[in-house]
Length: 129
Length: 129
Length: 129
Length: 129
Image 1 (tube, rainbow over the protein chains, first blue to last red):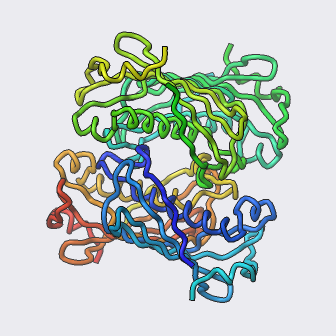
Image 2 (image 1 turned 90 degrees about the vertical axis):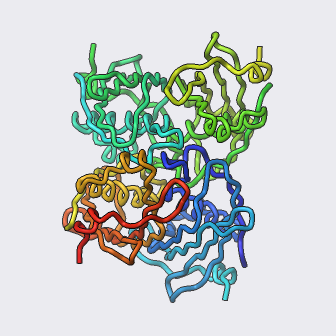
Image 3 (image 1 turned 45 degrees about the vertical axis):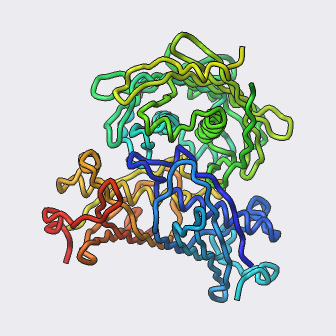
């Protein structure tokens, strides 16, 4: 399953080099990831109220082309099991058919004491092979 | 009592117009305010662990001159009682003796249910007349 | 003329007090303002390419109720002439019919040397009385 | 040569999970990198005025331990040649002797038309072997 989230870049996310700052891409990835998870029944607000957290353990991103102020982009996200207790998201950022960035984030679930907890069974079915 | 907090503006806080984005000034004010409060015994982390929160109720700011990437600024902050349950901070942002911005924030204390609680007696003594 | 911009708050805009940080409201105002201006023919990217800039000179905001992660909000914006060379925006942030915040920003137009330039005639017709 | 930049995390950089948002680490890396480069004669503001830009091409980061509001951290940065036209920075984020995060960013130099330009000779001498 691939999730598509449309985002318009914000003026405030540009820098003096006139392109979107590279740290904002990280936020776009999260917006798409949280939207994906909510859509399959894992609302981050509900989870955190129940003391289940889903931190980013590892992140890598390639910046292929620059983004500009008010660009309309699509963030494509896919989820994959990575190990017994970890899963990953793979992303593509696309602007009008052009690949702007690829990225990967690695996650686990933890409780309020930062102790790792098992992956929810209901989530596994939404992971790509 | 006037508090002085030195901050260096960050590259990531600029925009494509090559000046520091106006929303970052709001963060600078908070950095100075939190530093002031910590210095007089009101560490925000400790307060929030005890379910005491200090929201901004009202904010106004004048942008007099632009700030640029890597500018060294001073944020001057003073605290004043505003009413029975509210107090305010007044700020000046200065760069090399030049006034860049003036601002004011209005605050109260609330508990975890957003219920207003009295101003701590220990805090009153640090407020300017 | 009143402009309505729908925004979903982002997880990354929350703070440890579990509400949206007050500096993010400033960004929401700008998103609505830039969208308004683009819609009436004043695309900020085009203007800035022509060395016309529209800084915030003054800003005031009331925080009436807190916003939370992933809230769907409407930012309502209206533009008014303020003086010969200045104009203002008035905003309301609404969540499901509830007033969350009111705000006002004051603006002028400047060139690349920070020199004030006249208000464009074409913009005046979109200003409320 | 290893560069050390001290930073205090900001309250505004926390999220509702009460830890510093992972996108803020990216900003900390940049603060250290820009400080390093300025210290060896490559002030980013001067470079960009001369239409020389230094984008992030690739970034990877491991989040080992969480950071909290108002933590005092050190960002250690080292620069290494990566290829004929590219160089990398390696980082460690440390809090009171504890390793919080490791990261790597890959860079090149480009002109205002996004065309890659050679690495400055003067910069090579500051790169670690």
